Length: 329
Image (cartoon, rainbow, N blue to C red):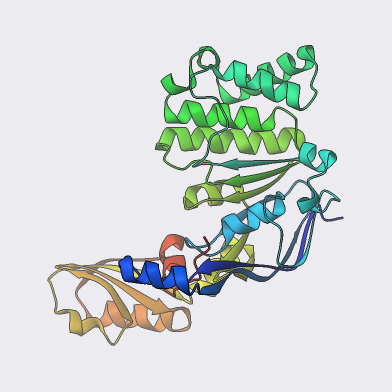
């Protein structure tokens, strides 16, 4: 039975339609005008217990709005949503104990206090006995490789250490559903890898369900066998990363190293020119024509080396994201 179920979910915001400047402000004050922005539109999907699912989309596509509806912070305009057997917007105690929401650009730890003090507050809020709270903190701190950092003021921790402490605080009550919105935002490569490793380990140990939003494709490829791609507030893809690549990129990337430079127009007959710099050329070739084109290139051009590969997923998704999407407030 699905632990997260979304059916025809939608959310519309009413925003002021005001012209800039003093005159526009006065006109808006006397004759207020508003317009509707659809942030999420007819979104449907389900997630099974224990799944780790990536949630992709450009800025303004409706990802954070969806996570806020799933966690009960925003009431849907239309549609139905169920998380762990609850309707999120009711914010029932059992529901709040079953989920957590981590936002990379927000913090719950008290800035001037050590994380241990904030963790004590969290334990009291969730009614966790002192002994059990200490055991959970020790277990999570070991998994996150946190030690003395828990006794330093939050403001003296590095960004990576703060993110680890935020994760510890969010998981202290042992939620079964994790909504993670950009948990590696701003972290360096080593800190990102540490957070990914922890999330994978936590999922294996606890069987928790994870819905992960990230603009770092490394997070998604390392953790999520399945991805949901949302664009313009609607679901564009639900499936594997490989399936997404096949759908968005019906071409292959062919890299050439030539014995001598040739004019760019010389390559137009073979495919789309991605890059042409001196003796290095990168072409995008339709999959159906790939074998024939490679044969032509080797026979007709002074090729020293040739490599065929899948285009980077960031690049193929970026092509889709060039289409403007609705921007949610």
